[in-house]
Amino acid sequence: MNLDVHGARIICEIPVKIPVLGNIVITETVLNTWIVMAVILGLCLFMTHGMQVHARTKRQIVAEFIVKKVNAMVGENMGERFLKVGYAPLIASIMSLSALCSLSSMIGMYAPTSDLSTLLGWSLMVFVLITYNKFRAGGPLGYIKGYFEPIPVLLPFNIISEFATPLSMAFRHFGNIASGSVITGLIYAALAGLSAAIFRLIPGVVGQTLAQIPLFQVGIPAIFSIYFDIFSSLLQAFIFCMLTMMYIGSAAEG
Image (tube, rainbow, N blue to C red):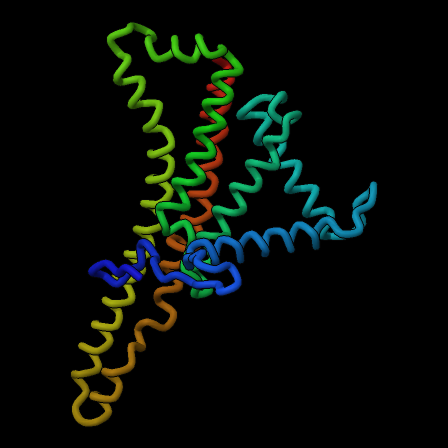
């Protein structure tokens, strides 16, 4: 496991070896991602079990609400034709996976979104979809011609811009989640130091004993967790999906 100077994990390199698969090594990032995907699958099966034409259960009402909201978001940002080819499930999958992967840190798991390779993989998938829609909109010649617009001298900048799209999406998401982990680690360390410094002022054995217990770490970090662990996780999942829809939608326009 790699630790930075503040003790915050950025890239996890502890492999979990599964003997039945021979020499295949599974990292903690991959394992936790599988766990999150299993949770999402379980929730989907639970919410859609025994569905009826007219919703009579709370879980079906919630499921229909989520589907309507995602369909509306895709229709408004990408166009109705993208609903027909199944982009709504894709956006819902990315959003739920991103949000739950980030929120998994709240139960002591290593958040897969704190690993840059996870975000690069998602961004690469989005980049393939962007390129595919550009080919569909203008054909191979139209795609190549786009690199020379509005004037041929901008060819190098257009190439850089094309490949900067997935990189910027990945680093934006990764930077916000990883920085939240670093800041949270700093807060815990600062509170531990403050607790020790204050309780050492108490003379005798009582002060020495209390100085070893980071009492200030109880409750106070939860306030910061509302932003760094909850709000930021949900916000970054939403932003990543909005950028995905915007880039794919604009690529399909030619």
